[in-house]
Amino acid sequence: MKKMKKNEKNIVIPKLMIIPEEEWQSIREDIAFLKNAYVKDNNSQLGDWLNEKQAQQLLSRKQTSLWRLREKGKIVSEKYEGAVYYSKQSIIDFLNRNK
Image 1: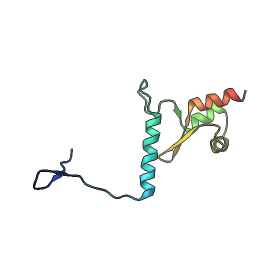
Image 2: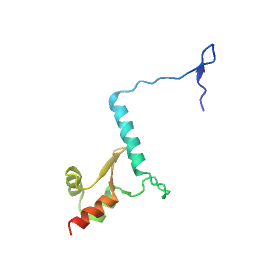
Image 3: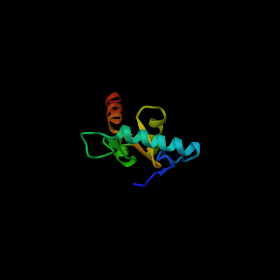
Image 4: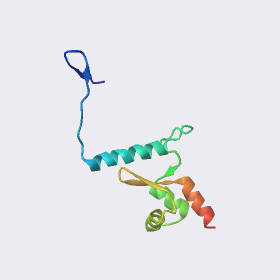
């Protein structure tokens, strides 16, 4: 761990970092995704989230159809590091609603 600087009275002086608003927002979204995706009972950090290909297979639909469902709010998705992940439960709920 990096040592923090101290002044002459032995008071720790934290370092400040300035980052652009867009980067801060991206970091906050990544943290929110990881927080929502983490499942304590599961060793996998993605828990019940599916990648694009897995969601396509489960729904038997192509990428464009997934995009439409996502845009209409019919299935829950999160974007992380440029990839889209889908909530497995929201896909199951969607399938049950549309039998």
